[in-house]
Image (cartoon, rainbow, N blue to C red; front, side, top):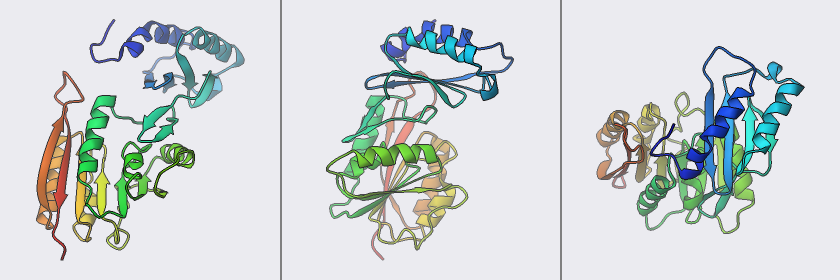
Length: 274
């Protein structure tokens, strides 16, 4: 019926989401519904509930009619297909305007994302030329960093990197941004690849970044900013970095998952030049 941490715009949309789900053919499984409160309106994506082959003309027409009747709804995507789009949803990240893919992982709240960005930027060395943004997503850290240094953005989600690339091409006043699609769990950035970077920013999923931290300790990267939503894997990864010669500086908890046991944290580590 209600959720105290939803934005008012998302909360007001819940009845419309139910009507849209009711327009789907009957299914006997869970549906994953992703709602994005973008700067200019709402995006809805429905996955796992229906296969593309079941999106008949009648089903698409019913879904589009329901979506068209919802004020503030910009886009409806079902099973990966755009059923309805009034306009592209946009999210501001630094100077960039990013159009997020339908099922992309984003930070939970604008305020928490802004706080994390502030702490990451505060960790930048005074003389900075290149930064590696690992697990970059659509660029929450990439774009603010690119106002100060050239950035290599690495992520396994190719659609997220495509959105990042499109936004970078349409944004003035940024240093060069390079993207690289890569699974950093299976193939972390190696010591040679990390040469020349003044800082590495890591924002991994809950599993952490064990393999990448094991490579970082072999490198000469002087500053590492770890952004984590899992205190256990953060502690494990920071231990790897400390044992490898880094010194732990600030650790800042950010309570973006209000009313839950989860907490976000930004940890900054530095090492003396060898």
